[in-house]
View 1 (cartoon, one colour):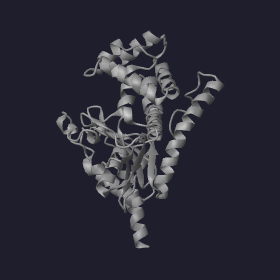
View 2 (cartoon, rainbow, N blue to C red):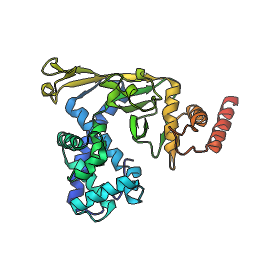
View 3 (cartoon, rainbow, N blue to C red):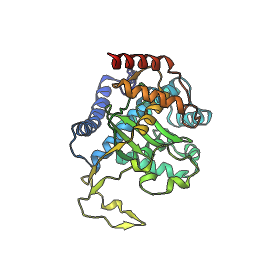
View 4 (cartoon, rainbow, N blue to C red):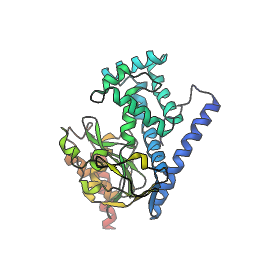
Length: 332
């Protein structure tokens, strides 16, 4: 489900087991949280568990077929390819394809705290120009991937619940699919059932209200009413503030974040599904024919928006089949 079947083709069996064990530990935290979402339990994560879950989601996105093909099939843009080749020279890597694998090995093996420290170091080199970072940063992971990972890991988690009468669909390329602008993700989506999604929300919506509106980016498709900061229970008591922000020195791995399920209106569910319909490569999965049909109709209305959609797929045949099936069901 999550990635490439032969990703370990060039390493020993012992190393393969090590990587899978490290990943399974991260996955366990995510799976426990997802089961709570399904069962209706209170949703809580310690700070350490939250970091593990976000690390797992970010790695699984990077491990996915889309990202792998960028390296394996030569789909990187010119500037990124040049930065990858500099990274190869610095680390004695012979093939572009091997950069993808060396990146993922480093992310799996390295603790989230060490990844974030490395991210801060890399970002400080060229805070306004990521490509400047690539010319000066010399470490085991490609700088642009480190910057992407670090930004994603700082985003906020929300749990979305589809309004009654609507459902999320799945496509083969939808894990971590995002809504954004100019390469900046506003929301990354991780569907965990037809009814629920874990959403990574850009930190600037949550940490600094009004910040996104100040950027030269289009307005998000989704209302900020769908963003909800979790209640935080600090082990050491309420933290002192500096510049309006809690001092990180006061944080504990055992601080507790308590989340609520946010009910998402039907039209917003169809918006999410439209993103999945557009990024689909081969397959679609859905439970409700009615919700799927409505999602297809919505996609047809909006797919000409070049800022949101790339492929503008034609689903006429599927829509016709669903329409016929629904008519038979209602007439019988």
